[in-house]
Length: 436
Image (cartoon, one colour):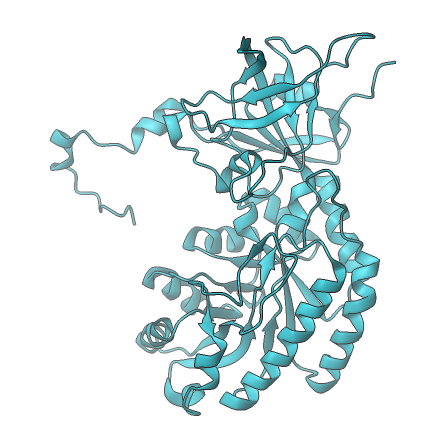
C-alpha cells in the first residue's frame, strides 16, 4: 500500500523540491497557526506570547506569527529591524542578550521598545549614557540569574554560573538607590530564563511560581514599579523516541491560577512568555537530496546535498548521546519485501561530524531520493555553520493556504564572493570595516 504523499499544507514536498531545489527549508503555515492558537486559547489572556526570533529569524515566518498575535523578542540589531519590518510595534518588542553593542542599544532606545533586558551593571551604565545622549529615558528590565536552578531542562540557563544576567545575590545586595541612580533609565521589571527544552508541564509551572516570587521580592527590595515580568519559557518539543509533546490544557491548568493570583496583586503588570522552538519547530522540514550512496566497512552511507552546514541541531551538538530527529524518505515508499536501513546520512562537508542521521531505518536509497528531516523549523540554519565550505545559505519557503512563497533566496556564488576583498584592492576601499 502506498503511503500518503508528505505535504506542507497540501503541497507535496516532492513538488516543492522540484520547484525550488534542495537543500531547502519548508515551513507549514497551518502548523505555525495551530501551535500558536492552541496555546493562546489555553493560557490566561494576561500572558503575552513573544516569539524568540533567535529560533527562526526569517522575516516572513515572524510576520505570519505576528499576524496571529505574537510579539517580538529579539537578540540583535538585525533581529530588531526584522521585527519592525514585519510589523511589530516597539511597545511589543523586547531586546535581550549578554553582549549588546552600543548601536543595538541606541536603536532600541530611540525606537522606544517595551524593555531592554539588562544583563550586567556595566550595561546598565551604558544604556544610561546612550539614553541621555538622545534625551530619552530607557525602559529596562533586569535579567536575573537566580540562586535556584531547574531540573528537566535540556540546557540550563540560570541558577548556575553563566554569562547571562546579574546574580540574584548581587542584586539583593545592591544599594537601594539602583532604581534612581541613572537619570536615563527607568527600571520597570524582571526577566528570568531558566532553561530550554523543558518537557514537563509541572516543572514549567514551578519555575513560573518561583520567578514571580523573585520578581516581587526584587521590586520591593530595589523600590521600582513592577511593570513587566518575563518568565522566560523554554517549552520543549518532542524530537526523539520516548518524548511526548507538552499538553497546552494541562499546562494552563497549573499556570492560569498562578497568573490570576499575581495579576490580582499587580493588575497593571505585563507578563511575558518567550516561545521559539515551541511555536516553530514542528512547522519546519529540511529537504535534502541524495547525491551518492556507498558502503564502507559494512556500513551504508547516503551522501546528500545538504547536512549539518544547514542543520547543526540534527547532529546532536550539546547532547551526550546522539539521537536522530524524525527523518523520512519523501519521494517514495518502500516496496514490498524491500530491504531497509540502517543508513548513515551525511552532507557534503569534509568532516566526519557531518552526519545528520545515524543508523536510520530507511528503504534502499539511491541518488535522487528526497530526504526530509522533520521538526526542523527552529534552530535550523540560524544555529548552523552555513559558511563552512562555502556552500551558502539554503532557500526557505513558507506555505500558506496551499500556496508556496519563497521567503529567502538561496545564497548564490556571486553573493558568497561579493563580500570579500582581495588584499591588494582592500586598501583602495573606502567602505567601513564593519559594514555599517
